[in-house]
Length: 271
Image 1 (cartoon, helix red, strand yellow):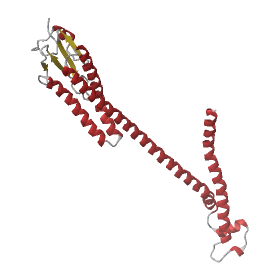
Image 2 (cartoon, rainbow, N blue to C red):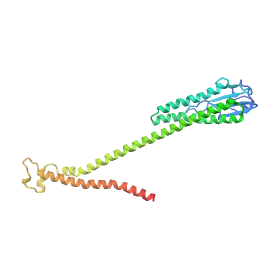
Image 3 (cartoon, one colour):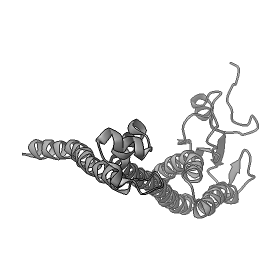
Image 4 (cartoon, rainbow, N blue to C red):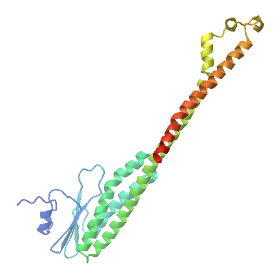
């Protein structure tokens, strides 16, 4: 039978270990057979990794340790945990320097697979401690894995909260800016309504006050010698402003009506 196991061929390990492993690492898990312990763990993952890189730590019955990539002895397992700590420390520094939603999202994107890996890694070491309660090095690694998991969880929650706050703050700022623009547009509409009748009257009647006076049947006593009729001008302004006041009151009353109707509808819905 051809051996397609991903474990090193030089390892003299129980055959059940090789039988339970195929050509892919699969999930993180511990294996125990004939006094041997095999830890199947994952290297710190990147967010764009489609497959996990396996790391195997083998403890023989005599207490010696071997690993595929990180050397021998318990130092190999410590090096593995060191890498996770280094990744989390780097992301923690990036989170402290983050200012925009994109910065926080980048941290979360990198942290999510690591957060998941350290959680599963702690579960594996906890299960290994139950299977091999006398192995002191497993207890120490389990406790350290828990501390790493806790740090990753705090960083994940803090970054997610910061991202949510940044997005909410940006939405609030945009809402306030839109409200200010709406108020400014409303004021411009009021001014336009106030002076629209004057502009309309001057456009229709023109500014030739002598002709306007003759149309209105006014005599020469209104003429001041320069072709300017103060009474006609003042009358035009007064009439225009009066019409503008009426139009302004209509515009403001019409713009307030939808708001009042919306408030009444919300009040009736609440009842």
